[in-house]
Length: 495
Image (cartoon, rainbow, N blue to C red; front, top):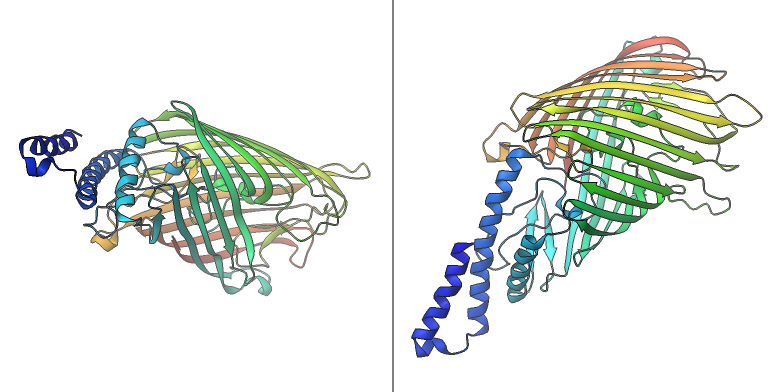
């Protein structure tokens, strides 16, 4: 900051010494000075953020509520490199130093009449007074899958599909208010996914909160809280896909969250997903999750997590039939299935998470159990699931763990292929197990997966998974023991 103060001092000294310069500066001269100051501050912030980035990994979670604001030169001037925060900085209200930078930046933007910055492939727009920001969002994830080796020819399928095809927007008004909206077109239909408004603030140094209201993505389990564009495998674990409320990953309601230096906690109260049915009462779901990082250093993190939910089901919305993915999302014949199961009155689920990373190697274990209550005195339908996953970035990049949210995000690729590097290359492995018990038609299954991920830059990836799966269903067209292999590949980009 010494250079910044010296620039201002020099202008004052010259004005005092020379009568011609003692005149009131013009608007253009003031704008030039503000631009110069903003450029120096942006350079200083870039140095600080680079130091932070060496210790942390960038994350852009699916539920991130507002755009990352980066310091940069106003439009129509010499560009300044865009600087993004190491984690979802939009969740953290600015401190005194950041407010000073933003005030100077806002003055520079006002002098230039507004600004546009670029980050992760799409522009971020800022109003001239610095009060408003706006950013379009996008996600394109395309999969291809082939299964073989099954005893049933109807399971040996080759299919293609869009895991996600999303368009949306996000923005802020002032320091505290933010919003986000996204629609998905992957099934060739319009499906509203994330859609909320929120308020964030700081309680004290190191303790922040936000409250979001609208159509919300679950904060439940490690991979269940990770966006579909950030999972290390093509499909989430069976813990995330099976130990879940009947309304699945989204619900309409409210979610307050509390953040501290080594973890976070959230509480969610929702009704059903967005739909057009107002003829019956919504089901009610209460869900909570907390995570803690007892070890957190530049290159090492230990993750502990716990979560649970309780759901009340209303008549007409109480079907408990389950058909859970076990060998890939895009083979509809390959599932662990219960058969038709009616008469549910509610569900209760809970789970634990244990994992972390050291340098380029990460591991994560998850386990959960779900009890679905049935009417007429029938015993609970019980679901049990667990998984063990791991990965190694052979290029030396750090795993994309976000300690603020306790989930995976987009990686911070050290040497993008678009800048002459190799990108980031990761090898992964996973074992997962699922059981449906205490029903007339029980079922179980397991899968072992080997994968390779190639991140071209921080928002573009190729993924390949080789899966050996095993199922034993008592209902449906594919009963009894069966096993086989699935080979899947994906290309994805997130804006």
